[in-house]
Amino acid sequence: MDIEALKAKAKQLRIDSLKLTNQAGSGHPGGSLSAADILTALYYRQMKYDASNPQWAERDRFILSKGHCTPLLYSVFADVGYFPKEELATYRKIGRLTGHPNPKLPGVEIATGSLGQGLSVGHGMALAARLDGKDYRVYVLLGDGELNEGSVWEAAMSAAHFKSDNLIAIVDNNKVAQDSITAELKGVEPLGRKFESFGWHAIRIDGHDMAAILNALEEAAKAKGKPTAIIADTIKGKGVSFMEGQPKWHGKAPDAEQLKKAIAEIENG
Amino acid sequence: MAKAATRDGYGSGLVKVGSNKNVVVLDAGVSDSTRTNKFQEKYPERFFNMGISEQDMVGTAAGLAKCGKIVFATSFAEFLMGRTQDHQLVSVAYSESNVKLIATHTGLAVGEDGPTAQAQNDVGMARAMPTMIVVEPADAVEAEKVVEFLVSHKGPAYVRLGRPEVETIYDDSYAFELGQATKLMDGNAAAIIASGIMVQESLKAAEMLKQENTEVAVINMSSIKPIDKEAIRQAAQTGTIIACQDHNIYGGLGSAVAEVIAAESLNCRFGIVGIKDQFAESGSQEELFKKYGMDAEAIANAVRKAVSG
Ligand SMILES: Cc1ncc(C[n+]2csc(CCOP(=O)(O)OP(=O)(O)O)c2C)c(N)n1
Ligand SMILES: [Mg+2]
Image (cartoon, rainbow over all chains, first blue to last red; front, side, top):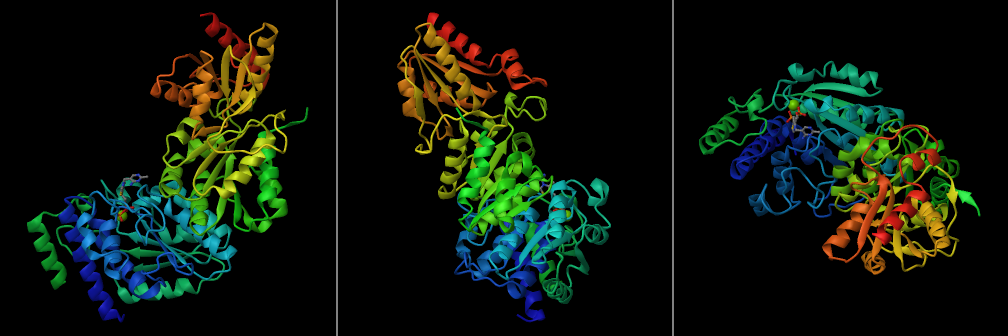
């Protein structure tokens, strides 16, 4: 997919994410909108995988460590064909489209939803690739608030120690957690320097600049002897004026009117 | 009789199963105490010491398992179970990862290190996690057999091992079966159902009672979850069941046995010998078991009281 097509795809996924939360009457729009460009770059350009063969041994792995952002994840999965689009109607209802992902759903590698676990799991997968002489990569998407969890930094230490250069952490640095602005909750900056001091290669980009995301992923793929952290500066609720930067849109669904307004803004944005 | 700790059986068991290339062993900086160093010596490329980061170890284990590895993740029970409970629940149990959580250093038998190392609620936590099986071997031979069994059992497991050396009960002909208790002594006056180191104390108690012409059955319930219900039904026919565990009286083997007795309305007297919902202190295992009412004498007393009551 070329850059223009990727940008259009990201818009579509934003709209799909909002429709999902509206339809379910609950869910997490803010962090889905902020990560839309990143997931688009991964699933429509960077990662090798086969939605018709989810267990393909050579596939790149993706872990949504910030597991609440299923509106976006499931929108992607339905679109690339991990499950039928009609199944989206069961989002957050009885069935396998749980509010936070579980591996009974094709495409989900591991359950998440309790923050701070995904990077360790991703690193385990990276170590398995080494043991098996495979060249797949493991991508883990984390939230900035999630970085408050100490276990993330345990994993950061491990991945550097084991020189796991097939592990790529992407921080959706949208500056907002749940009840607070992250800097006011418990500040996580300076992120690049933090990861570097932990022995990682760090790249800082505008997480809504598609070309920059693609370049960073390319650079990460060339890393040798170190894991890579891509700090993607993003805006929580990106594309919807009344949601942008607002903690209150972390975990609240838009009503019909808000949805209409939001879609119009994204389409014209 | 030979003596060895169940953790020693774990170490030798790992070396045995190491020829399977999918077996990977993790430790959290205590490999000399847990005996995973035995595996490391033989198979260094499949051993990862994750440092003193138990949460990270459990997550890493899950990731390896999701890529086809059979992963043994090891630390002291308090640090493995207490510290990482949520990681186990999400990354291991809910995700049905093929991870074996192996905990050494359990209960008052830990001794001198005191309450921060004397894990007493680990079985309760493990038992209450869906998909998780729970096993506590009674001697080093059984521990070794459990390791062999786990390689063929796909799914999450919690295994509770002990620090001190204990008498070896089983010989190599023993075959561990999940959900299957073994009767070590026969008797009709009462039945003692025990696991881990308490099997040893129970055997001693049964010998003491024998001198008084009270013949009690001793059952090793190493498979705590799933539990052997048939063995409990049969034990109930003696009229008295005493469950013995080096664990808090809430949530451990005793609770598991009580659940079966209650659910099936089994008609028997029932008692639990275990840690009476309190923190202990430092001391030798013998001193602690005596002071906190968990030695053979205490078990014998529990039987005496029940059968005379
Ligand atoms: C261990 C844990 N603690 C708390 C929560 C509740 N929670 C869900 S999302 C969230 C905020 C996360 O913020 P961030 O990581 O920045 O995510 P994003 O902004 O991308 O939505 C919190 C506190 C959780 N899911 N897990
Ligand atoms: Mg955030």
